[in-house]
Image (cartoon, rainbow, N blue to C red):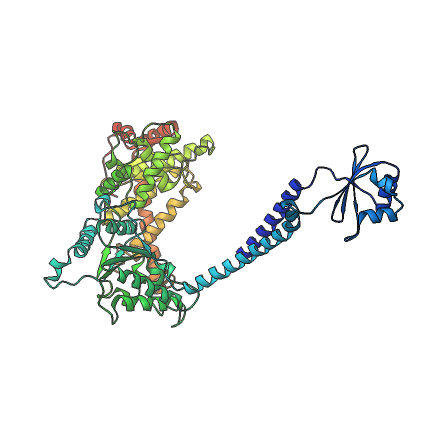
Length: 609
């Protein structure tokens, strides 16, 4: 239903309601009886009529018993002559109080005009809405090609000091802000203001946050828009909106124009989706011209953000358009600690909270993930009726973000609980026994997400490179649960299915991508990307069937060796494995200190995988 139809319907309903209310209040409570003139004449002759009031053609009659009645005469006739013609004598008429009432006053005119006035008002109301809708449609037609460009209001002002980490990125951007504030010291040396700055990084790393910080630091107008707002189904609208956006920014120069998610229109042209007149490509062409076309006399800096720089058109990335490309990485441990402290502001956090420990538990977390972690911790503290957010709330929130909430309501049998305990105990014991494995942070047999239990092992510091020995330790740790079940129960369960999948995938990468197998320093398989989809969709098999068989043999060799290492560790420490499993059955969860305390009496020495 259109807006016009809704408005007309409401107007009609309102008119009906007003009419009903008016008739309710104006109409008398009870209507008098209506009699004919013949009956009136006979009642007068019988002496039953006390008074007759004549109002035009309306006769209001009052009987001698006090009752009322009405009658009607023809317009323009004399009531006296009419009654005489009906047989009423002059003496009988003299006994009746006959009055003629003039039709005048506001009530008379209101009774005549109320209905046509209401009708005219209703019709006028309907036409007013019709013309209003028509005028609105005409205005939209004239403004269809205008961009929805917004100017930063600085209500929630963010500065660079409010952005933790990203040291190099902030240095680059502070220089641009300084250029806008004090252009003379740069221009005196012949420096040219950069035309475009592209912020690149994974989702949640703070690209939009950094842009807001630039808006807060600079004293120039900061315009922002999403690239998806340029594109429409009508040809030429995107290019028109692009021109309008740049024109608006130029009128306020020096200024900054921020285009978020620029890959929505900046994807590589000629990728097989759409033709040369594709609306998205026309919009991109207009952006290219605005940034570095014939008109170069501009003091507008274009700031753009994307998490897919690999799909952008090369013409958009060349110097003169985007002169600077700033990469925003995932935060390291120090940055994660600083980000957590920033997001802790405004929350009642316990004084004994160790943010360093939380940062150690969250490798690979982006700034957005850490903000979500702090919020989940605050929600958990409130749910438990606490006055402050504690260390346990933060660690629980970290695991919830990674794997999902605990499923304590999941009912399992005692035998399944024992299998799970030995399975997770096998993972943890193998990890603790290998020299190149990461330290075990936590072991739990409580279901979380899709996992029936989990063993969390994390490095003490951020790792950017991994050696073959570390990969072999990871494989042995993955096979620890499988080996523990087989060694303890003489059988295996489906609980190891995900471990086997992850181990198989890692072993194949060691062979085909990392060159760590006996096949030598060579990679196998060529990945093909489809630009317009922006994702990996196929792998070209650039090796023979014979080599494929050799790859499978190497993968199997890696997995067999990992299983043998895990089995050797578990056979050597059967008593420790039983102790870990029994403790897990009792407590269900072991933190790092508790796990190390369980292993301490056994004096386990690290070995090489």
